[in-house]
Length: 98
Image 1 (spheres, helix red, strand yellow):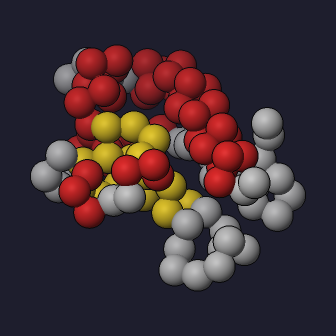
Image 2 (cartoon, rainbow, N blue to C red):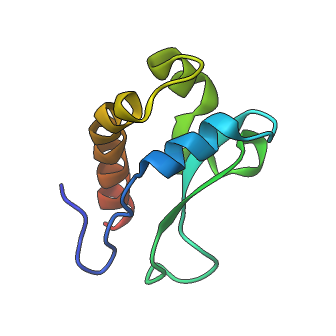
């Protein structure tokens, strides 16, 4: 399934991954923030502490990012990783949009 026109998937960027890697939050995660409202709200990506995020909205954990990218990944390494993360975001938006 692909994201719908009603709810386009947010695009994962190098900045999103860097924010996750640099976060000082306890057990930081990259997650889809659907906003406070109806299902019509445009989704966006955000980084926050895992304990404060609805589990099904988590796209990527800090630990997984470190495992996949290493301690100090280059921009090229992160850019090569983005399609995998984007695929997860697209799938999560599609499932939620049903």
